[in-house]
Image (cartoon, rainbow, N blue to C red; front, top):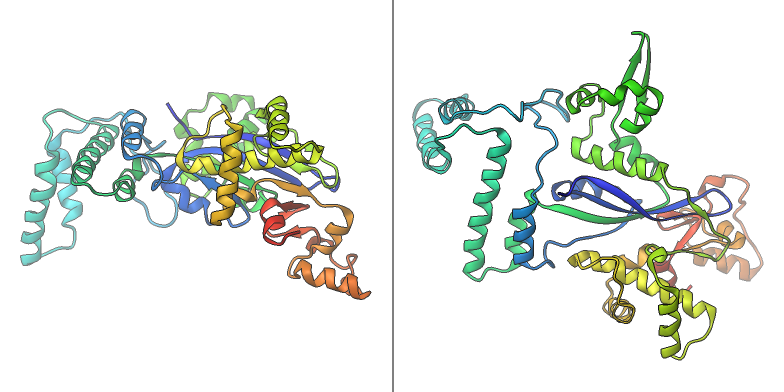
Length: 398
C-alpha cells in the first residue's frame, strides 16, 4: 500500500555551496494545491486528465488514500483533538448527532425543509445495520463515488471529468526540483516540541531528528506525536514536508564543477545504451552523450503526467518525446535539468535584473552592478540559485 514518502533522485551542489535537489514525492492528491503555492519549486506530476479512467478507478479501488488522523471540527487553521478511528458507531447515534449539527440554528418552516432534505439524501443513502468506524464510513463513501462515476462514464462522459470526482481518494506522485527549500520547511514541517525536565524545550522538524536526540521518543504512538506538534500546517502536507526533510538530510549531494549538469534520473541511465543511440544518430562528441541524457531526463519528468514512469527506459522513445514536447511548447519538464554557473555567469545573473541587460553592459564596456554590495542577489536564474535551468537555456538560446 502507498503511503506519504519522498525519495531523492538527484542531489548536486556547486563550489559555492548552492544545493539543487530533485525529489519524487508521494502524497494525497488533495494537498497538491498547497504544494503548488511554493513557487520556488519546479515540478511535474501525474495528471487526472491524462490517466485512463479504468486505470484510475482500479488505483482508487485497490489502494485509496485514507487520512492519517481524524481531526475533530475546529476553529482556525489547525485543531488538536482527534476522533478515535477504532470506535464503532451504530446508525441511530450517527443519525441523531448529524441531525443536531445539520439543523443547528435553523427554525420554523426552514427546519422542516432541512429535515426532509436530510432524510432524502443522508438517511436513505447511508442507513447501515452494522456498527461502523469512521474509516469504514470513509471507504463506504469511496465506494459510492466509484459506483456513481462509473455510471457517468457509462453515459460516455470524458475521463477528464470522471477522474476529477475520484481525486479525494487518490494518491499522487510529484517530481520537485529546487535550490530553495528553507521557506517550505519553515511553513510546512511539523514542530514537535520536546520538553526536558519541564524547563528546556526543543522543536524538531521530524520524528527521526527528535529520536536521535531523545531515543525514548521512539516509543511514542501517532497520537502522542500529534499532541506535541505545534505546527499550524495541515497534517498531511506536514507529513510530506517531513518526508522530504528526512530524505534530504540522509542524502549527500555530489559536487559539480562549473558547466557540469544536474540530471534527474541520470544514475539510472545506461551509458552503453546512450553511446549506441548517439552512434545511430551519427553523433560522436562527449557533449552529445550529455545532451542525450538531458533529453531522456526531461522526457522522464514529462512521463509522470500520465504515470508511465518506471525504471525501464526506452531511450529512443524518450528522445522523440523530448523533441515533441519542445515543438509543442510543453516546457515545465525542461525545468529539472540544470547547469552549474561559471564565475562570469554567477556575477551576471542578478535577481531583478535581466541577463540580457548585463550582457549588453559587458559588450558596451561598462558594468554598473557591483557584486560586492549584496551578494544575496547574485547567482539567480529564475527560481534556481547557482544553476541555470535547461528551460532557460532553450527559451533564451543561451
